Length: 261
Image (cartoon, rainbow, N blue to C red; front, side):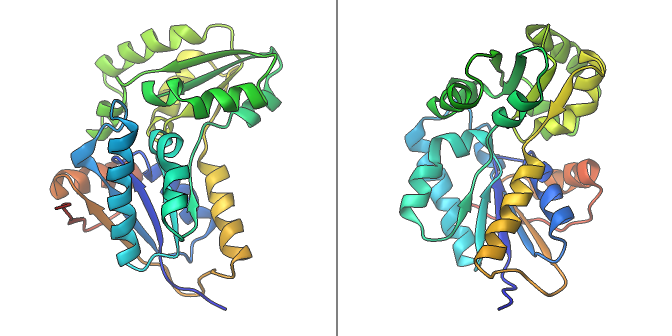
C-alpha cells in the first residue's frame, strides 16, 4: 500500500540538511517536512529535561502535520531524547549518532577520531557506542561548540573558521579515520580534509540514516509513489534561513515561520 504522507526531519538548525540531502537522494519520491528549531540553537549545553520538552513540542507539531516517520537529524537531540520520545510517541523515530562502528571497521592504524558537540561527546550514549564498537582502539573523542555558529551563517571557508578548525583538529594527530558526530559538520568536510590530509578517511552518518529510513518505510509498507514535495519550517528568522539554506544545498524554498507557544 502506498503512503504519501511526508517524512518529518528536525534539527536545531541547518545541520540536518546534510541528512535531508542523503534521504532525498536515496528516496526521491518521499515528501519531506524539515523543521529547524533555530530559536533554541544550540542544543548542546541544554539540560536533558529541557531537550525532552523542546523535542516533544517539535514531534507534536510534526504529527499534527501528518508525518509517517520522524528523523532526529541532530546527534545531541538523539543521544539525550530518542529513548524518551520513542516511549512517548507511537510514530517511528530514527536518530543520528556517530558512525563509530564503521570507523572502527575501516581503521588500519587502530586510531580513530570522533568530532561532535561538547554535549554529544560527554553523553553516556556515545561512550557506550565507543565501548561497544571501538574497544581496544585508541579513540580521540573531541567535542566542541565553536563550529556550529559558522555553519548557521553560511560561513564554510573564512580565515577565522579555518583557524578554529586547525586548532581543533590538532587533537586528531595520528588518526586515519574521523567520524563527524554532528550533522552540521559534513558541510565542513572539504576544509577538514584539506587540514587532515587525504590519508584520513572522513565519515558521517547521513548515508546510514538514509538507508535506515528507506528500510523502515519498506518494512512498514509506507513508501510513497507520488512526486515529492518539501516544506521548510523555522522558529528563527525565515528570510535568513531561506538565504542560508539556498546557499548550503542549492535549493529554492519558502520557509514558514512557526513559533511554539
